[in-house]
Amino acid sequence: MSEASARLVLLDGVALLHPEGSVFEAMLEGWARQQRGGRRLQTKTVRGRMNVVRRFGEFTDGYPWQWSAADVDEWMTYLTTELKRAPSTIRSYQTALRLFCDYTTSPHYQWPAECEARFGTHPVQVCHEWKCATRRCLPGWGWETPSVRRRSGGLKLEAA
Image 1 (cartoon, rainbow, N blue to C red):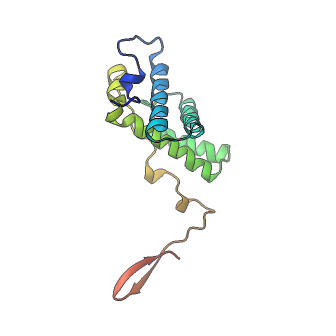
Image 2: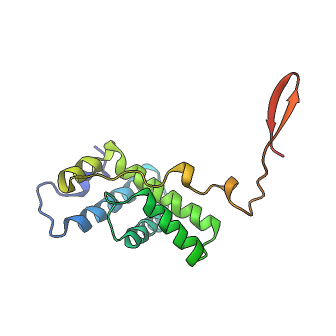
Image 3: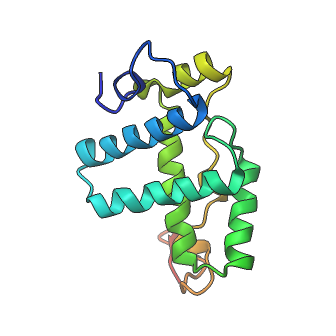
């Protein structure tokens, strides 16, 4: 069992005074352990990602097992139109959120079962790749549509 799993972050059999907030903080702590231990990431990187996830939670006024893809759309709209965040910032926020959701939805870390038992629902991935910013689809990155050329009787894709 991983030290980042729900059972090792939450004490078994202990009643929580504020279960929603306590479980969310335990998820963040488990994710931090997974990033520092398993992925060997710098403390600064881990802290920055955790702050992004906390800000998203504050924006939605909800918890990971309540979040939806529509919440991400609303947050991204707010960040880009109201706060004028740079494309690189948007990408890093989406990456942090996607990685956190990968962690909380993985059965290996037992959060889906823990949330189902406590709240009757479980976290889902809310930051899907096809909806997230990438270098090639953001303006200002100089990405050009690949051209198709015929060579030796076959078609080849080439970057323009």
